[in-house]
Length: 317
Ligand code: 13P
Ligand code: SF4
Image (cartoon, rainbow, N blue to C red):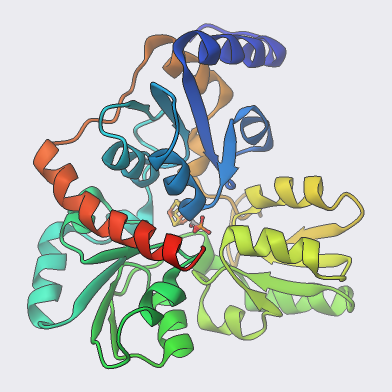
């Protein structure tokens, strides 16, 4: 791959975006430089809302494959690019269509709600999708006695179950970043920073959720750091979000919660971090790799996503 300076990558990417009428959508877990060059940075819900409503001809997704697939499903006439097709998601990949079909068969008569962190095939087998921003509200929008099957994240599923008190059967999947946070290390940090608050993503395991001062999606965590008067936060989600937290609150401190076991000592999603400036540059230049899916699959997967977006719009989410 041709090597440019960081400044050259930025100016070339900006030039190509304008020339090709392309936009870059980036998730909060991307590196700071990528977030800064994006046209829109958000959590999974905001990114899918943006993917459904924009005037670009090309969407370059700085995130992982299930997010780019969701963008393509919502905007099938647009070119959707993902700079590295290996940017998958261990949580999404833990739920295969064959096993999920069996799981559904073993739990008949339940409304199937799937987290957007799932493949297009799994979405096509679902009634409604949700993100961590709207999961509780989506479940609460259904009648109290409606039985639910939730996949693939068991921690988000159990969090929703506790919040709503509904009859929910949960698929046993986890995210490799969020399940790894060390309760012991978090409590040690809290002891060293007595005035801090622990803020936690609902994909974290129960013991970590139990010591949280606040639980929410990436967007909700970011908002909490602004609205709360506390000056120091211990962050139990992927460390990329801290870039926006610092931008929003230059006077506050943010400490990433450490994982139980990690060679680099950081809490980073290895899939998210496959996206680099160089790959974005090359992808925009070649208009490849591009997300393409079977039309029938996209038509089926669109139904639960549009249902989620409609409910979210009605609830002002
Ligand atoms: P949100 O963007 O919904 O907070 O989800 C976090 C996540 O794990 C995305 O991969
Ligand atoms: Fe998947 Fe977890 Fe990475 Fe999100 S942080 S993309 S859920 S592996």
